[in-house]
Figure (tube, helix red, strand yellow):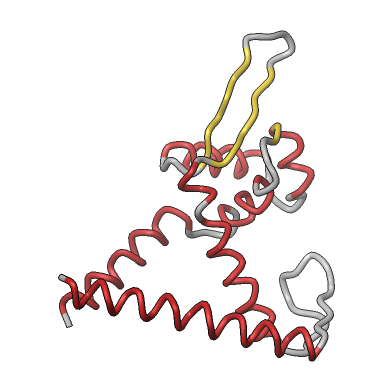
Length: 148
């Protein structure tokens, strides 16, 4: 029981780093490569400038993103995911699959920037994919717990 409790504490610690409304959306904005501040801002129009700066600073401090400043005029600053940040992409894919399954056939959900349409056949395949991914992860966790 203690090992399982420790596992959940690690999840709590992870949420302290990546939690909040914007951080995972910033990771998604950076998933395709290095972006300048204005490019990130355009991808996330609902976030205020102050909040985006705050979130980027926190993510840099926590080792999720890298901020590169170039000594040119006008100033040029680029952001990219670190290796730790890139490792969040598969987690976000799983979260996306879960979201589609959870939302089901709803075409409009509160808080989304655009309506979502769900194909029942794709939903079924996503459910199978998610079940397989989660089963593999659960088996790995159990093996690691037994090894300790």
